[in-house]
Image (cartoon, rainbow, N blue to C red; front, side):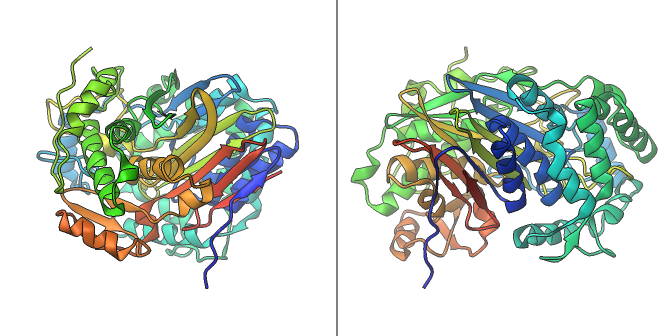
Amino acid sequence: MAYPRQPLLAPNGAVTTSQPLAAAAGLAVLRRGGNAVDAALATAITLTVVQPPSNDIGGDLFAIVWDGERLHGLNASGRSPAALTRELVLAATDRRGAEPVEALGGAQAVGPVMPARGWLPVTVPGAPAGWRDLHERFGSLPFAELFTDAIGYAEQGFPVAPGTAATWAYGVAGHAGLAGAEYAGFGPTFTVDGRAPEAGERWRNPEAAGTLRRIAESRAADFYQGRIAAAIDGYAARTGGFLTGDDLAAHTSTWVDPVCARYRGHEVWELPPNGQGLAALLALNVLDGVDLAALSPEERLHWQIEAVKLGFADAHAYVADPERADVPTAALLDPAYAAGRRALVTERAGDPVAGEPERGGTVYLCTADSGGMMVSLIQSTYMAFGSHVVVPGYGFALQNRGLGFRLEPAHPNLVGPAKRPYHSIIPGFLTRDGAPVGPFGVMGGHMQPQGHVQLVSATVDAGRDPQAALDTPRWYWHAGRIVLVEPDLDPGVVDGLRARGHEVVVADQPAVFGYGQAIWRHPSGGYVAGSESRVDGAMLGW
C-alpha cells in the first residue's frame, strides 16, 4: 500500500525545491541567520550545479518577494543579441539547417518557427545579475557566502539524483546529431565518455566551480563585463554566434509590480509579461465566475481545461516584451473581459482563439524565514541543456530562450534585436485579503500556467494543504482537444471528459505534468510546506 506524503510543518522557516542537496544549502543559510532571500539564492545557485539539465549559470530567473509588507517582482530575463533579426534567423536557418521545433504549446504559428539549438535562440543569461540584484535589495549575509555549497559540489562532486539523471539522459540523447563548432564544448562538460551520468554516479564540474567563484567575488561583474563575458564573446565570434560582449554589458534586470487575479476571496499573483503568468490569471478570472462546487468532478475539470485554453489563446497572441510592444495587460485582466470570455465556454470541448480586449527544462523553489519574508523563484535554461552551446573551460550551457520568439512579421513577439521573448517560467504567490498565504510554482514549460490553476484550485476550492494539493492528479493540455491525464485520475471523470469532446490520453509520464513546490503560512504560526513527489523534491524546515 502506498502512503501519501505528509506536509512539512516548521516553526521558523522552510525551503522547498526539486533537489534535496539544493534545499539543504538553503536551509543551512537560514540556520546561519540568513533571510529567505539569502536562502533562495543559495538554493538557486546550488541548483545550477546539482540539476544542470534543467537550469544553469547561462539561464534566466524570475522572482516574487514578500518583504513582510508587500510584494516585489524581479524580471531577470535576458534580451536577444543586438544583431538578431528575423531576416538573419531565416537566412541562417536556410543556410545551416538549424533544428526547428514545434512552436510553444498551443501557439498557432504560421510558417517557420525559431530553431531550438545552437546560437540562434541564445539570449543574454539573466540569472547571475538576478542573483546580485535580489541580494543587493534584500540580502543579509555576504554575497559570496551564498555560493559555498554550489562551489563545493562542483569541485568535490555529488551523487546524481534519480530524477536529474533521467532528464540528463534525455538532454544528452537530444544532443546526438547536432553538428557544428558551437557544440564542441557540450560533450567534455556534460557527459561521461559520451553518455549521461547514471543515478547515484558521482559528478564533478570544476570548471563551473571556477565560474561561480568569479561571479561570487565580482558580484556578477565578471560575467557581464570581465573574463567570462570576453570568453562568451570570443567563442561566439569563432563559431558563428551573435551574442557579443556589448550585449552582455548592456544587460539589466527589471523590478516590476506583480499583477493579480481575484479568486474566491484570494489574490493570485504573477509577474507581468514577458512571462506567461498572464495565462494563469486569465483562466482564473474566467473560473472565478463559475460555481465549481456545484458541478460534478468532470464538469469542474472541463471548465478548468476550457478556461486554460482561453488564457493561453490570449497569452500567445499578446504576450511580448512590454518595452518593445503594447501589451494590453490591464485590459486582459478586466472583469468585463473575463465575463465575455467565460460566455464562450459550452458543454463541449472548444478550440478558442484570442479575444479583442479594449486597448489602454526549469527549476522552481520557494523559501520562508522567521521574520515573515517569503520568496517564489524560478530559474531555467529552457529545454534540457538549453542551446547545447557550452563555452569551453567555463562549465555551463547557454539558454535557448529565443525559441519563444515568433517569426510572423506582424506578431508583437516577433524576433528582433535587444528584445525579451515570450517566457515560460513563472513564479506564483497567493494572498488572502492582502495578507500573505505563500509562494508557489509548478515548473514545466507549457504546463506552468495550468499547473498554477490546478494548484490554486486544489488549495482554495478543495481546502487541501500544500502537499495534498501538489499530489492531486494533474491534467495537461497542449493544443487542439487533446488532454493528457495522470493514471490516478478517476476513470469516471475521464469518461465524462471524453463525452464532452475532449480527446483524453492517460499518460504515465510524470515530467509532462510538471514539478511543483509550495509554502503556506500556518494560521497558528510557522509554515506548512509541500514538495513534488513525482521527482526528487525536498522540503526542509527548522
